[in-house]
Length: 452
Image 1 (cartoon, rainbow, N blue to C red):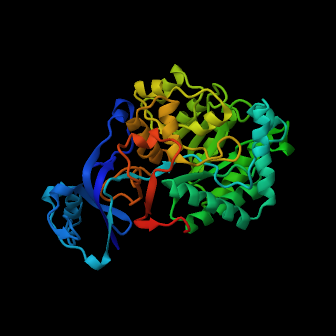
Image 2 (cartoon, rainbow, N blue to C red):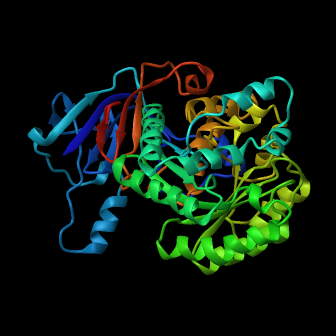
Image 3 (cartoon, rainbow, N blue to C red):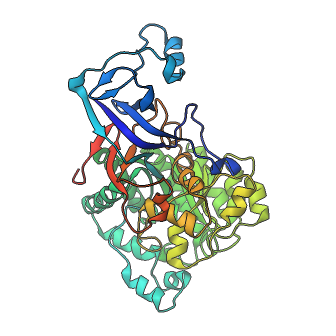
């Protein structure tokens, strides 16, 4: 099956030569193509170009299509990378071609949400009321709320209940434009319940067209039964949880909440070292509550990303420069908890890349709406629309290890895109922060309906 999208007002984040991320001043530049077409074959982006350059008439649109190489693999690679104007042409079967007219509309790569806790049991609006009354995040946690509250609820829920709840959330974010999402464990806090969470995430991978990346976060908090014995819990994570997660191949990454009141740099170091030995690359909750050293230990272990980063200074920025670690900001949590905002402008000016993710969870960021995150990037972090678009697509794809296939419009990448409603400019996406601008969602080359 093939899909042709024609008369696209503007095709956003076009790449002729895909890159893994965008950093520093380059984040202010966004390549687009006006009055464009896009061809999808199977689950991949086959080709794109300007409407004025089309040559073969197909349903009122002239469309160049590259001829597939069948004998020489090297020729096939060269053929993919040729400019559209030089490509050989062949006509697709009209009966297998679905045509979408996008007159007045734009096409974006789907959002990549690289940090969520989307699998959880029930909401925590009672704590939200406590917050309104003036209790801090840490005070709520000390009273048995926060992560420990979610852990109790998750323990009492069945896998089927967790799957059903999570599918509803996935369907919601999918129709808001998200095509790939990382989901962490961390509400289990026991061997049995951490494995239960990760098995739920594996089931979700088979039940939704959204691409899901699983992360093991056994060290999310210290359970109440280990109060005063934190070192024993760290030992449990290392000696039992990690080997069992690895044996069942339940997670691609390992995460630790390295911050004041949670896990120390030394404990984080031990856990990441154990995870690395079992083939799980690091991702870190770092510097949300204080200058915790989380960024530094993350870089030490070549973490794919360090996330939150409200407390980031010159030393942390210097440590991140020149590394393969993506600084990832979670605007929803900072907004919901009324925390300080990470110094994104300073990071970008120093030459760093920046990604943005939702932190979708029941306690500190109960929303997975990446359109809102895009708006927050501009409103609260003073990012240009171009910078913000990079932060929620190609850079957040990198932060979950997916930028070779997701995060931009490039030949050969996964056909994960959305078509907007009629909008005047791409800057309208962050500007109109209260409305859903997405009209049509295409994931893995298929048009998605809300009821899937």
